[in-house]
Length: 430
Ligand SMILES: Cc1cc2nc3c(=O)[nH]c(=O)nc-3n(C[C@H](O)[C@H](O)[C@H](O)COP(=O)(O)OP(=O)(O)OC[C@H]3O[C@@H](n4cnc5c(N)ncnc54)[C@H](O)[C@@H]3O)c2cc1C
Image (cartoon, rainbow, N blue to C red):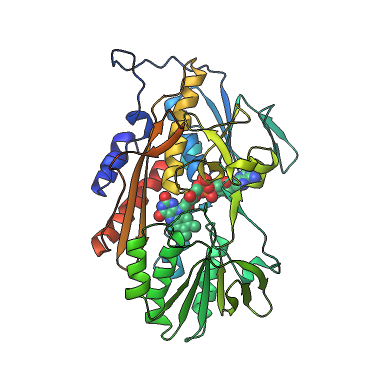
């Protein structure tokens, strides 16, 4: 899909005004307002991208599209990417795993990305090199790290499958779906929400709504206990509080400020600050941090709350200028979301194309975020924001009057959600 087709697809989804790729939105201009020409890219420039998820796949594609001569190698440990976006629909049986699965054929064949199927075990941020699980070392002019998140350990939990987080796509989501299907009618499911920052702020509330709606039809009498580590709904308070306390109030029991200290996996019980809570199914979404390869390389600093601080003009690490960190591993003021990961990737690709050509990153990047939440099996709400660079704080801040959320939820938004998902995934993987 080219830029025009992407915009058409997103326009069809009612999101065209939000979807301009970062480069098209933020062309640098001279003092007279004329676009600056981007010098040709050095044919020798080499980039290694680690992680082929929402951020990594997108940056590979756009590095090749916008910096045609840049040599791009993607190191990805899995042959197939399985997204957790819309995974609520897999939990309720409305979607299968194939519809959430994406391969790297287009990156390889259409865009000329070299795809290495391996895991990176170590990053050398000074040499800009990576060590692979098979013992090889690869080096480049720049590294782009996009390996996503990891989870804190939970005392008592040695077998994650007994209390899956299902917060990365694939196997754990399938496990949770099986556990839900096997749950007794009248049973209890417990869903925990970690402290911020975590991946996909509305995600846990969305999952709770989708499962509560499904329980009404498939597990009458079942309860869903939601234990939120945060003092209140982290986002979309109006919609989620209406859904929790009205629409799904017979099913959802919501507790805030809950700390979890121990998981007794034999008894399927959580020890929490409000007492011991047992569940037939426990979806333990644990506290999150940048992937281990990012932290072991010293890129996540003590002050950046477990994620890697970056210069948001290029996503270069603030402690290792030859290493860029995009997606959920980076610490920015933008939400940890697939749509934002796609946008950060484009800003990074544009900056690298300019830097390799002897120029500077665009001084005024703009990004946008969109998120749909299924409230019932056929109805969704949405939330969106546009972010722009603030040269004073050197962070991305919400553009004036750009944040919006749907008032309530309906089936039209649900249909738009599917178009938005298809367009976003195509922009990243096709
Ligand atoms: C239930 C749920 C619903 C969501 N819904 C939405 C939504 O509606 N909208 C939205 O915008 N976002 C949504 N998100 C968030 C979105 O999925 C993430 O923010 C996004 O996937 C982050 O992209 P990423 O590239 O940083 O990480 P990922 O997409 O997780 O990709 C990381 C990649 O790196 C690879 N990798 C990791 N370590 C290594 C290594 N050492 N070596 C090689 N490869 C490695 C992994 O295999 C993976 O392919 C949702 C998330 C969840 C859990």
